[in-house]
Image (cartoon, rainbow, N blue to C red):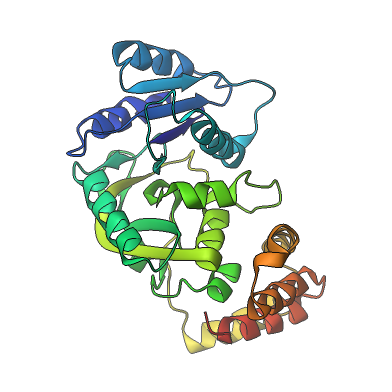
Length: 304
């Protein structure tokens, strides 16, 4: 289990407790703190000393890199040191520092992972699940993150994931084959979970468990967090269309750069259709907002 921390002292103890209370006890917790300025690092050291048989702490070197780089470093570390960590095969779950896991989370996702692997439908496998959305005090906001965000977990084809990520990092469970294929996560990736989802979709399989196995805490320091999807009225859509069609969207340019990086790394392993989808996505770099949106709409119509 991989845990990347940064200034998370307020909620970290609750998350660690929920991990230790899992019904699936065969785990090693690998933690790397990214130069916290609060007492997170001290909490991590204390936790590691209390559970030396289950917790492995990595000292951060260099400069602060953010969650994406932190998790990429953790994946690479586990692959390189799996023998020292006592792992025959390197399965990895990802944990945020401020959520709470349901006791059965690891067991439910592990069983689905093994089912997918045994079916032989994909070498690289990513399993993810739904979440409960809660506030800082764990009061309910939404029963289902997927419905709250207006997502469709079935839209996990490669072409669909190129323009819209539906994999939430703190629910991911990946196998060693996917980890080896995906790392290092490049600086051009929008986020590590999006990159891992793309790699799994292109070269393996994504499996979704429609159970809310994480209390997904929303607070002022969330890196991304949940945003409620609200259908827009017809009149509202007309106003929105006039505004948006003139506006340049920086995120589209980030998505284009991510696609360009993916194509450069995996070009020889991709199908013709995957290469075409990537090149179309690269067109989202256009500085003309109107053209960005036309292309985005066309990309949404592509099959997975």
